[in-house]
Image 1 (cartoon, one colour):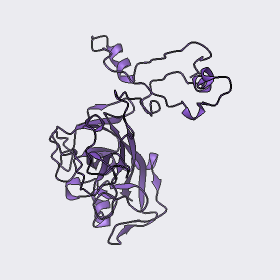
Image 2 (tube, rainbow, N blue to C red; image 1 turned 45 degrees about the vertical axis):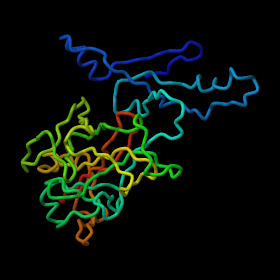
Image 3 (tube, one colour; image 1 turned 90 degrees about the vertical axis):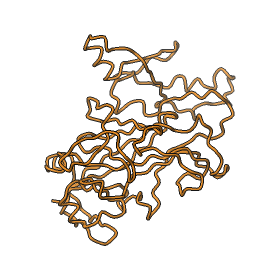
Image 4 (cartoon, helix red, strand yellow; image 1 turned 60 degrees about the vertical axis):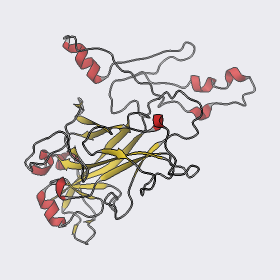
Amino acid sequence: MGFLQNDGDIILDAVLTDTGRMRLAKGDGSFKISKFALGDDEIDYGLYDKNNTSGSAYYDLTVLQTPILEAFTNNTSTMKSKLVSINRNDILYLPVLELYTTAGKGSAKNANGAFNVAVDKNTIDTLVTPGTGILNGFKPNDDVSRVEVHQGLDTTELSNEEPLARDLVEVAYIVEIDNRFGAIFPPPGGVSNTVLETDTQTPAATPSFIDDDNIASYYFTLRNTNGFVANLGGTEDSSIAGPRGTKLGLRIMSSLELRTSDYLFTQLGTLATSALSNDAGTNLTSGNYRFIDTTVRITGVNTGYRIDVPIRFVRST
């Protein structure tokens, strides 16, 4: 990995994604470039100096000469901030995604700062009832706890009952999770449009794609009747202060490997040094459970805004 030479000419360095390279290698005609993305992860726009005494041609010189790494294909470590094009110049605010974590609403984090997924029956039985920030990963249908994300303009300058401009509303989301640990499950009241059979015989969504790093990507839209995405009303309790767009809700089903084996917890996890308590005071005591920390990444397809949700998979020892 090296740096691009940027002392003169403008260089466009483009590479194929892992999926593109895989299809190119097949040689069966399935390779066709249909999409591309641009990013500016390494650019510090704070270096723009409009007071440069050498004149306007030097205002952005430092920005243009910022050392930039060559493009690389690993989707987990590149293109963190994708660029978007909006064909109007009257936008004062851009929408964001925010976790809805109001206490007592079924979507709050646990006191340890994460959403904890109890992976097997033994762990669920030990806790008796999941509680705040603890999701039933063994049988998600038995639990109303969920992860919920709200989208809109988080500002008090505009009323939350003002409509959000149509081109700023997220109507589709991409959800990414490590496929070794779990699968995405519809929120309470949602109806999954696909079925993944497990030993608990409960339905979960089917990934749209699983990459070479075992990261599963799910694609959920407002139009699909799967219950994941819904409009966010202006009078609803929300983490968004201004005009609202949509909301995404989901639960997490633990993988068969996490439910039936200690292997991943031993290789990738940690033995707990503090108790995990539910609302009733029943808890997994220190030293009696292992956990794996990871994230679920949620990206708005329209604006590209992304949020990483902290997830902790928990298994009683």
